[in-house]
Image (tube, rainbow, N blue to C red; front, side):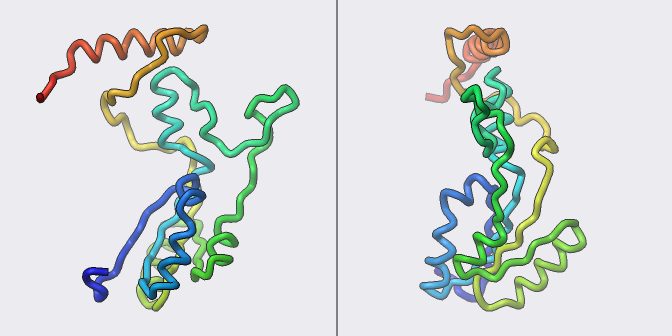
Length: 164
């Protein structure tokens, strides 16, 4: 808004999209063009990796139906993000490859209104380790992975430097 002559690019994961997609309507209403790269990795993949790193097996970070036993282990919930973005008024380009993605970026730059470029990615293809992050781990658990992660957490907390 401060410099309307600049192109604005937004990158958002699918789960975060579900919480903020209404901003597409705001961009159209106010006349501010955005190019949104919507990465469909089938849920909170980044938070899932963090959950796994603290022994919690990524609980609740995939969009799944509950199984008959009440667990979140049923079939994946299929969400048509391209149709969702289109229903909000955005121009949508769905791509399946890097060359298509590059072409979509060029096309989006030519568009005069908000454009969503939707690309599906692997849930398990991740960036390497992000180092240690001070995310508290449950002190009490029946899961050995959590107990191990808690011991690692306590050890890392002891060596953490305070900058206060």
